[in-house]
Image 1: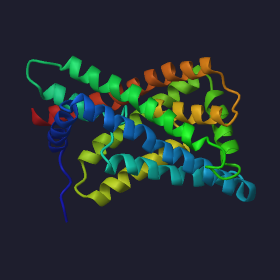
Image 2: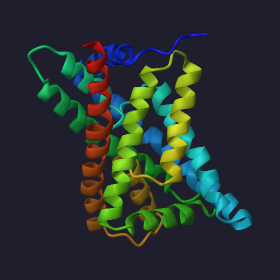
Image 3: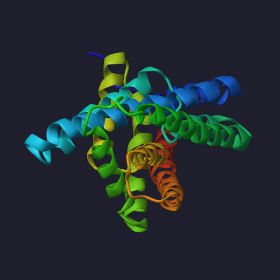
Length: 259
């Protein structure tokens, strides 16, 4: 039976993966970020379809069913090595910490800004394709609209707290992926995190924003000013949860184990 890697071994793996991500050319980074944006839309669309099919007969069970299918979208991201904002916190920061004499501020800033912007572009463009009349089955659009209004109506404090949880959860996925040794284990970890993210639902800035935009395309009563607010609040919460809680503490754990 394989032995689970120690925190220091996970850190070393993260440094190697972080170097790969930070060394991407601009073309590669834009392409992988775009892929991640439209890939996660598959999960959102599937959630809407399943929710619409299950809700009339089984009521609130539709929430669980939607979360179970959304997890597949996160599996697509992980297996395809697409670049999703927040999921790329732990590995690049591990590389920056390991890099003697430099915090690699510009490479990290470049990675996160490009990923953030291009994730949204790819996701919104693909959401527009799904919004074409007849692409999604009857009822799926209404389900997505309802989800969007629920997400947008939670308020700033609840949204920020949810984003802390969502940021911690998605960044934790990065750490967990460095702690497993097989594709099957990677798929399992990605699926579990995807289900938990949707089950909350806990806010991830790209996923939540695309959820809301999707809903607007199907008639959700959400203004674009509120979309901008969600972007700012959720990003702040993701940074606190992803960088502040998970990345810093796990790196401190690994560094402390080596002393």
